[in-house]
Amino acid sequence: MRKMNRRSMLQSTALVAGFGALGTTAQAAVPAGRDPFDYEVTRTEAEWRTLLGDDYGVLREGKTEPQKTSPLWHEDRRGAYHCRGCDLHQYSSHTKVILAKGWLFFTASEPNAQLMSQDTRAEMMDDPGPFDIFIEVHCRRCASHMGHILLVEGKLLHCINGTSLDFVETAA
Image (cartoon, rainbow, N blue to C red):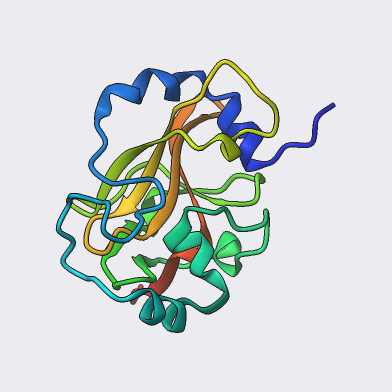
């Protein structure tokens, strides 16, 4: 049995391949000077590296955090999940789905919070499969990489890096 990780989950998501026609508003890794979209929050690479530290690769280069490493994976309080790059509200706790896969899952994002792109990077796959296009989720305001949309346990969910988010608790 093959070890389950985010890459193999992406490979096994047949429905995602059908969403390839949704558009390419943002580039997968959002390289400087190549993305035609004008983001509200922009920083130099040095400023991003200072702000994000070791998590730069996830938010700015589209990498994936190691499975089960985010403290937000266990977060069960009421609140809001904000983009770590610009503090834009991305998800509400009532849309979070608890799955034992090792990343955060949500049924939907907040309105006008995200842009989607086609992620066709070869490193998305542990071994070649029939699907080579995945839907990547970016923050609409700063282009930070959040994660991907995929079919998990029969549901279309946002599979998100906890590294990409900050949690803000709300009063009960």
